[in-house]
Image 1: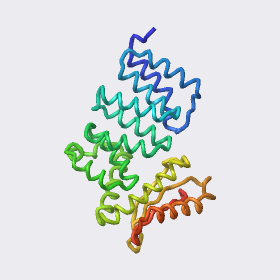
Image 2: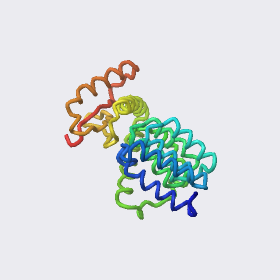
Image 3: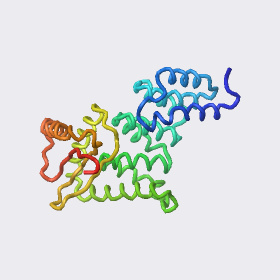
Image 4: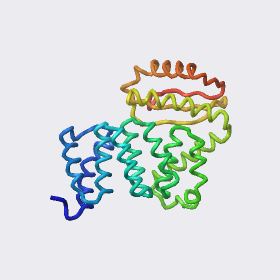
Length: 252
């Protein structure tokens, strides 16, 4: 028997998924996911039903199915910031960085300011200057005043603006840096390194640096991570004397 109020049922099921989405782990178990998906299929509103099912698929690690569910959602209504952002965030928390970026980038023609902000932060995290430029070309992104935003939102956007300025100072080196950051992404995704921290800055000699933070419990693996990254950079023939990517231990 379907719920008389589909929105209430949707919210109830989403509440069950939120802790798993935020942690990047399936905290409700395989049986719990089956129950959520079964109940979601009973929601009469197809859009709400697919939203819950898709996020549950991400929590369960079925990313192919989740991407197809997201595609179906965008066919129904592509102009919903919440759907684009939630899928991208959920995938990112599961260390599915390439899929998260794919959704984030594809959202740009359809979303409002909130969705563009998320795409901007995602692009800034990985040093993707071209996507940042694309977002900045959207009139709605430049028309909003962030002074009314919460402190963390303002800080995140201002930090991304600083990254944007750094990357714009040398667009050729920024391209090299993004290529190297993409290799970091490849390693981080394979090893399921969570997105705790990344930084883009220049050192005293003007070297452009992308650094991905790992937690202290992985500090013994730091040398191996950077050695693998260096090998990948050589294999991909990314030759630059003025930019570098690296892993670092957060807090050190």
